[in-house]
Length: 238
Image 1 (spheres, rainbow, N blue to C red):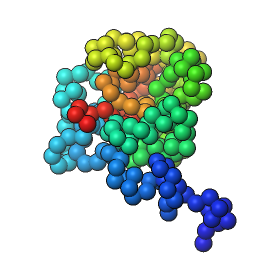
Image 2: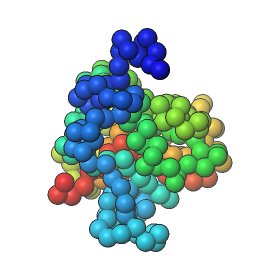
Image 3: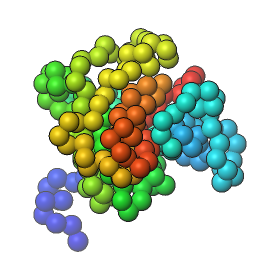
């Protein structure tokens, strides 16, 4: 039996607003148009791979040639089409109502990454970007993910002391150069990282340069292991 509130305000599709049966989901049309990552994936970054999942650890071309300072990685969607639109709405259009369903998709995609002692840590943003946007989308996703999975979250364990150039428009080498040393452990709050298995959270994984800088910062603060989890992964030719 529906509650009076549910009757007055029925659940809506997180993408298009069409009434749906369950909260924090997508209607059938939007679900079909959203490129969720399923099946065989790169174990280090989560990008989809050709072939069937054979329970073997396989890597994509990038992860075969780029040293990754984390152990495993996953992503919920391919950064294109409806997925890209929702990511940008969270990031630039104050659509924080999309965060709970997005966190649910991330929890499903990253279920293999979580252990009882997992600590969820968002990629930090420089304070000027937070001031301009009023929030850090990675922190919002991390908090929602922690609520859904029941794991601890440390929103301020890492800092970005200097405002780096935007990554958009840079090639792989430029992205890594831009992020070198850009993320550091918080001088007073990073002790929470020591000995923990960390899952780093961000909205988009492109080259992995930002995740690499954050993973190195976590390991320098004594983290036992680092994994990465993104809402969306850019994929060649997608």
